[in-house]
Length: 454
Image (cartoon, rainbow, N blue to C red):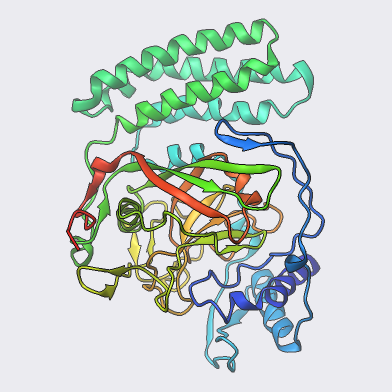
């Protein structure tokens, strides 16, 4: 374990030195940018246009560069801290180490507590601010079908059938509790979805009896969307008050979705792609609200992808000396606070990382678990410096294990790419975002500034 962590920490700091020094709004210590000859195979999404499937190999810019003794010393210190719990030193950009030690990091055995949820739509379902055990008992076995389908051949259908029976029984036993948990204004819609869920379960049972293995996954997704809809119908308004100092900022009080259309340059295999991004204002209202407001200003339209190193895809740095959005009505930069919602909390933490708060074992409601996790970039030593620069994590589970990485609790996640996320790995520096468009949820945005002239 130690050699694995040391190797990749050393790789991260030594091959991506610019992540620590040259671009202050790039997520630091995000390394692992050189994955070696990892090959991915991807299938076309519904709105991506590609000529052939192909293998991905690292380009020349991604290959390893020589590294300094100092950089490896930093990486070894960080790795040792992760493994042993020793205090990790605070290192500044190309400066001397700060003498005061930071609090010890938690042990990896504590952090890695179970198999992570990697599906972005499942993460969004579990992140809803509800407390209805009955619907969760329906959801869990339906989610588990994904694992059942990993069994080869028709043997998987036995496990699928067990999952389905468990979900059906949970729905039968808990239906009255589920209905009672629906918000009064949404009850009719929620009951309608429950009817569709019951009918869909019967259809899935027939699919299993017909030994139609290929028909299981599409029906599972359909059923889980009904479940997610029922759960959203349980949310009655926005569940908390945003701190007073942020209440006048653009806030997303709920969920919204954005379609991002990207024109790919110099790639014979991929011409353009539309990525669906679901934004979670329940857990990051300030961060998501800021982004939706910028989308409505067409801030990102025509902007190039500015970083694509195999670990993240990043954009949002406007032309000129400014590193973020300059509000034309004030002619001043608009920055937003670091915003992290932890499990068990009713309101996000603002302005401090979970590590700075001493919450080493806390789990974030929106973790960096999924390929295409979307978060705000910021200056390394300024928690409240985020503005317009955003990044998507190209997650490799071996390199960024859930709840044991250097991102959760340090950067504000506010959404996930839920369609065509695998194609983020095909984007390169210079590819152009043709447009971003809010496709639903705009009515959840309060205090919009894009409507103000000038």
